[in-house]
Image (tube, rainbow, N blue to C red):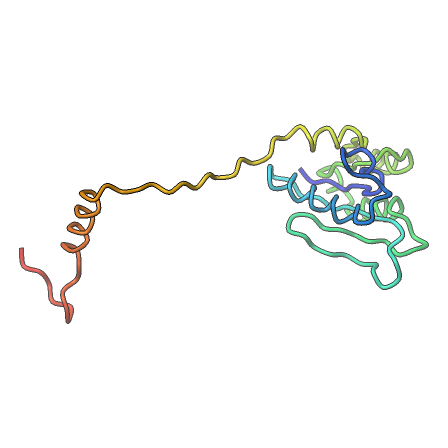
Length: 164
């Protein structure tokens, strides 16, 4: 699924994250990356009020972050993106609890999810289990057997074929 996300609208809906946190945007991007890693998702997230010199688009794997310059809004940027998408907007889900963003999404025939509903969706997907690496001691007889097998397969010097 492809998502257009109103970032500052989603942040207060996620456990342990809030707009008062200094790196709230980076933390959200990391959580969205984890979300994308657990399914076939692509996320474009929009943030308002980028500090001077910080506006622009940055790619983080399947997460693309759009930092809207001061004076612009994420809401307007999302509406503009929906307009540019045209008919393909139907293939996207817009995540925002802002009524004007939801109205723009519905007009573009995109799916709409509130920020709270999307936060639940993100948190409902279990983490990918990590692979446990364990050391296994080989029996000395096993080691000898493997050495014998590999010794037999060793190519002969100068490319000569073995005779059977």
